[in-house]
Each structure stands twice: as C-alpha cells, then as structure tokens.
Image 1 (cartoon, rainbow, N blue to C red):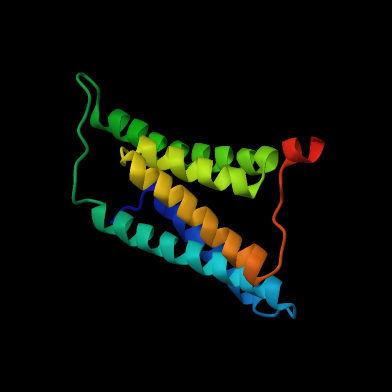
Image 2 (spheres, helix red, strand yellow):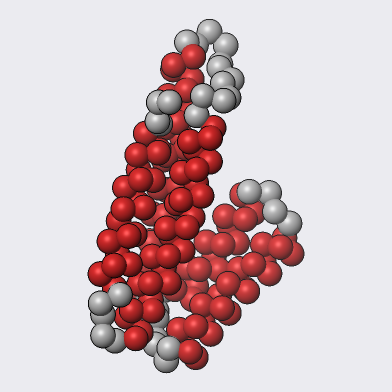
Length: 156
C-alpha cells in the first residue's frame, strides 16, 4: 500500500503530539499541564482518526479526472488542494487570534467554517457561541486564566 503525502504529515503530527503529551506530563503547574495535555490529546485523537481514514481510502477509490488530463495530474491537483485548504484555515485562525484575540477569533472561525461547509445558520451560530462559552468557562472561570485579547483591542 502506497501512502499519500498527507499520511506522512499526519504521522508527523501524531509523533509531535506524543512528544507534547510526554513533556507536559512532567510540568509542575497544573494549569500548564492541563492545557498541553488537553490540546495534545485532542489533536492526537483527531489526527489518528484522519490517518486511519486516509489509510483505508488508499487504493480503494479512484478520483475522478478532468477531461483530457492524465490521472496523475488530476490526483496531484486534488491532493494539493486537500493539503493547502486546511493550512489556509489554520493560518487564518492564527491571524484572527493575533489581531482579534481568542474570544472573537474562535466564534468567527467556527461560524465561517461551518457556513462554508453548508451548515444551517442556526447550527453555525449555536456552535460558534457554544464553543466560545465552553472555552470561556474552562479558562476564565475554571482555570482563572485570561486569554490573549488581540493586537487591535490592545490598541484601543
């Protein structure tokens, strides 16, 4: 079975998250340990699920090719699109955090991501507000930690 380039990046992410989890388990401060263990575990599980899906799909399906294009060209273009799209979403999210802060970037990211995936308005708004409330509850209330507010709000 030949692995796709995306599979190699998922394996790298899995190894990186194992490293993050192992290193963070040695932290003495509970807040630091909890944050890295929580996010490291979540990213690990999501990456593992995606890797299993990638490996199962390899060789089972043939992608549709465009008119007059060799199959390798169409496959390469689709693979490149699959890799670049998530990178652009992550870059946009980090830019939003840098400029607007967590409490504005999170609901905007979730809302636009869901709307572009053709979810209903109600589901998009509910998910964005709900996730923001969960993040606020965990960090502000539970851990008594103030999250970054962004460059634009720092200037005001």
